[in-house]
Length: 115
Image: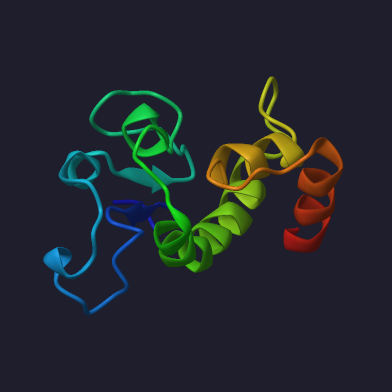
């Protein structure tokens, strides 16, 4: 794997914890990605793909996902912004933080903070 690619397999499971320690839906285990493309290895959809975004996200699950997905959002903004036809930073924020009800203004503010 090239140096500029980072493998993201189970962002809901902190490094060093066994995969079964969190309550992630099993279907998401095979839906991984690698930066800088941010495309799902299993279904070729923009990542996080529908397997991730359709998983239930109650308050406890959002609390588990938030720290890692904020980190991934920062990296995705760096990787994806400025690409011809690519998403703008607020769109990236809404894509990666789908489980939060962000308004357009809030997504812009988060994108500015994460740049």
